[in-house]
Image (spheres, protein in one colour):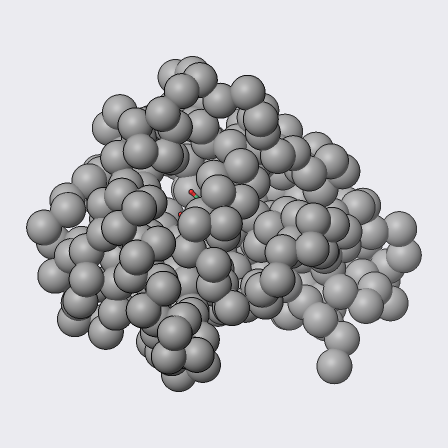
Length: 286
Ligand code: PAF
């Protein structure tokens, strides 16, 4: 596995890869890898010839007072895991390599970023869209793989790719979960023992939706949000940031009863102590 720390070195590497007409699969990450990331690499390996992973904790997508400084980092462990997963190359730039001077050009996607995490974390999605644009230009993938735990991020990146004609396919991949249902996330390491015990309430609430909709065929988005809230609040340390039911990928309020909606997402963000967790469930008519 090649480890490339500069854009120049990556470009030389890419020349060799492309001279063999190989397709490039890309898994962008902020490191502190877990099985969710590994599953993205596995999917990329199955669908492309050469898999590139990036590891970069992007300062642009963290707001003041957020966890940029304490975001977990372990380069040695990440490189061992990336190699074990079968990545062919890891692009591991420094902040100075990615942002050699103050950034004056950013990418922002309107509409989709006004609700959910976009409302709670102003500037976050512009930071994500900007770094992902840069990474797409540098890495030049044919296919890019993203986990659906960050469903809003997937919608934003897909919109950006469509609007700006990036020549690649965005591939949304299922959320991987711990055995008790907690969605895998690099931030789970922040949870205390007690918080970790309570956190799977998010999964249990999202899983309860099917039963509630069977009981109440005319369930609306607002009714479902209320039930989710009540169940999540049964965990003593849960501090709800949002519980929202929206169309997907448009992220608009659902007007009709949910049974009639083609596709909707139930998305939650909840703090346990200082740790903010997100999760969601997507319902798509067959
Ligand atoms: O999902 C993430 O880990 C990040 O938002 C991403 C896509 C790597 C951009 O920094």
